[in-house]
Amino acid sequence: MKSYKETKAAVKSLILKKRGIYNIYNLDLSILYEQGHNVTNVQNALDYFKYSPQAKSFMDKVAAM
Image 1 (cartoon, rainbow, N blue to C red):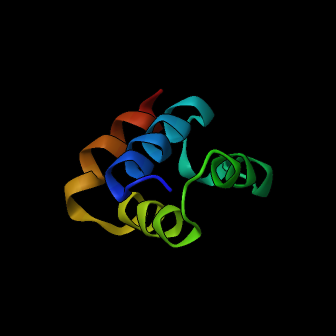
Image 2: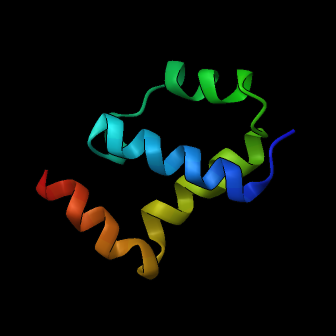
């Protein structure tokens, strides 16, 4: 099983690849789960990028792409 830090990095990479958090679909999440990421960690990482004030600047950059 991957650590939360590894999962967060994978989710960040996925957000960049998909050009936003709202373009991530179940298939994308299934791929993360198959790579050994814990479902809870994936959901927590998505929530971090969606709601965290610290991640706001990152999400603003992604939205500008």
